[in-house]
Length: 125
Image (cartoon, rainbow, N blue to C red; front, side, top):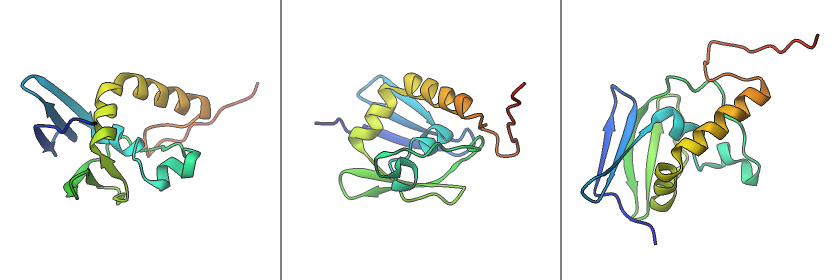
């Protein structure tokens, strides 16, 4: 069974969602990290994840409960279809470093960028 956070705070200026578990476990999840790991079908691709590119600088505009089991996050790029269950959010907190490293590696391998105003071109010499 997943743990419920004891506090959830949206920090619009720093573009982070902070989740507190118990008295001293605080996790800061950047909006970009949450956006590229959205559990939505648009991102997860029905079992074949779709690499999200150009999400550097994306922010969260709203968080709201989805029943007793999840949060619905609304991002300033219009994305709002992913329901982040408590279990999924906890896994994102616990695995943040590894997931982020995997994402950056996938971007590099695909020749893509986090920056929405940048195009990466690979030259085959």
